[in-house]
Amino acid sequence: MTGMNLVESPLDPCDALSRVTVPAGEPWLGELRRGQTLRIVDLEGNQAADTLFYNLHDPRGERYSAVDTIREQGNAYLSTGSCLRSTAGRPMLTITADTCGRHDTLGGACAAESNQVRYALDKKPMHNCRDNFLIALAESDYGLGKRDIGPNINFFMNVPLTPEGGLSFQDGLSGPGKYVEMRAEMDVLVLLSNCPQLNNPCSDYNPTPLEMIVWK
Amino acid sequence: MSTPSLSPERIVYQERVPGARYASLILRRGFALRLTDVDGTANAAVLLYNPHNLLERYNAPDTLKGQHTARLTAGHMLYSDMGRVMLSITADSLDWHDPIGGISDADAVRGTYGQARYQERLNDFHRSGRELFLIELAKWGLGRADLLPNVNFFSKVQADEAGNLRYRPGHSHAGACVDLRAEMDTLIILQTAPHPMAPGPEYAPGAVDLTVYRAEPVAAEDPCLVSHPENARAYANTAAYHSQE
Image 1 (tube, rainbow over the protein chains, first blue to last red):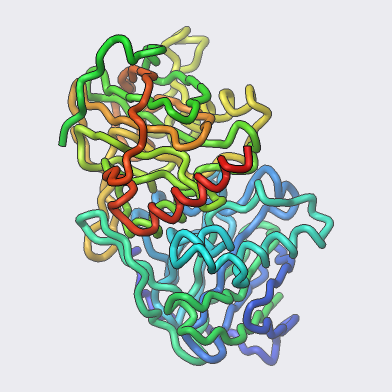
Image 2 (tube, one colour):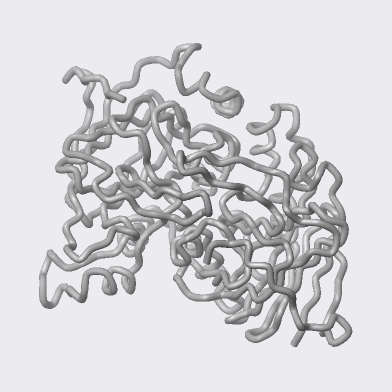
């Protein structure tokens, strides 16, 4: 598993169970049953999709783990074939198709306070992914809050590591209509923020909509 | 890379944590903690929380992206998820501590080292990083939801050009040490199980010495403050936080 595993999906959106467009800068919270497939479509290109997963039946006790996922596959990037593991080391989802080629799970999500650190102290009022996560959880009945927000996946984002231990944010490899598709290996809760970041190229300074397509 | 010698009158507390054991302490602002790899085989896994608001904790992604790094060493700061500095790495006899390898669990330890339960081995039984963290976290009212990517001091995980991750055995040496200065009061949860990518088969994680000492005042040109403009901003947020006390 070395990333850049470009695979198209045989699934037809006409057969989908649901199709939802998530406008730029908004959250999406949804449930996936084991065996169901979720496709995230980067409708207009260069959009970051900050995503968290929880065990639907034990969301406070088991959630997506970035470090377990990359350590067990022996590679820092996500693409077709990547097994997304939980904090208990169990497979939560498997990436089954990917027309983008590389997704990040080390860069985390933007927050009001981290935007201050990264860009300027006066950036605190700007909208950010953690606000999306927090409001979506606060308005839901899953009993989740700030302590349940661990490192996420940034679908469509490119954050390369170097052998010298460097880490950089680079222009995404995504483009209009590119997608990533994953099959649930357990019942999961999906929490997504369609990233509103305007300070770096992760959304090409122009956040755009995503489509969420679910198949049985 | 080097670490300064500590005069005895600055030292306020010392403790030796054997391999595969745990410790926790609140490091007050103005104090520093030196971790020493006693015989060169230790992995010191560390998680950080604000003892006055346990919802504020060390955030690996913010720390790494803020300083454009996938390794931690002198000059780096460890950020909380509230845009503040918890600890500064002021000195280091190594050039790399691992922030992305995570921890082992019981299944992984059994797979790498074989079964060694208390029933057979008494207090030499094999413990995993997950168990040790959960035991020590529980003493502060924290649990599974609070397990996050930690720092593995004295270990190195290196990516190649394709992103493949390799553990580097023999990275540390006897007496290697790293100094952590508290910029705000910080609850440190530490455990010394083997790194999850250590190859085995011998289960023999080394001991870590903890030395708490009075820190020097932070100078305007402090190397951690000036190494990245992000650090100066995170430190400004920390100063603003203290002005509310």
